Amino acid sequence: EGNILACIVALPPYQKKGYGRLLISLSYEIAKRQQRSGGPERPLSDLGKIAFNSYWRDTILDLLKNYGKDLIS
Image (cartoon, rainbow, N blue to C red; front, side, top):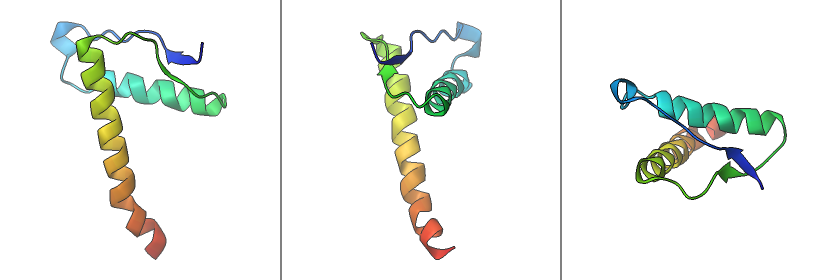
């Protein structure tokens, strides 16, 4: 169905330590290497929405921040 990620579980002692972001990033990297596109399985939990919004916000901001640097090099 075009999903590249079915479920992320970060146990409470490991939340807010970046493991969810690592798993999201890893799933997109694997999909990219397999030349697949897609997103997470729906519906997302409230915490899942927060994690994915945060991941994409930071990814886009990093791309925009480094955009000018790539043109100078």
